[in-house]
Length: 228
Image (cartoon, rainbow, N blue to C red; front, top):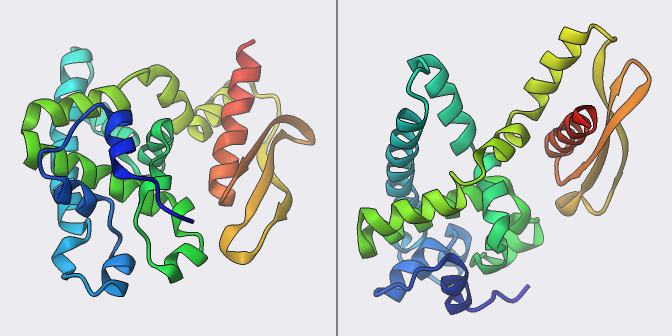
């Protein structure tokens, strides 16, 4: 797949980099750097390290200010669900981040562009790059716009399996379980379809690149259906 121009991504995220090389570095996976014989320090890993710290600080302050009565333990769990791998990859889909990542040929062939682990790492690297390029204000704005916005809806998705389990237990209607219905595609690009069921009754269906992602989607669909 041919990567889209990074100028297009700047438009989508609403931030213009003064240092374009910094932005390119944030999008560069080690497999691409190795194939191009680029210095190891020019892939996204160091920027990811920095971005992770900025994200933790901004999200911690946000949760602290927005939840005045919430105890430390619950704040910690909520932050963990917001900044976890799957959650960040979900947020990145808002602007199609996967289309702009620079991957090596081998990683491309094995489905690297759809891996939550890579997408979430690049998301953090972009935060780190914005921080170095423009400081805390624009990096915090990016985090608030793409990660901390519409949090109630996102929280329902992030914690769907846990919330659904609690709902089913409270109603005591039967045993919740997930059934793999079918899978398709080559090994490096599988697509899984899973049903959430109470005993043998289907209550939700989800599709994903992994069984875990499909289960999460099925749980979310079940929760939306149960709320109606």
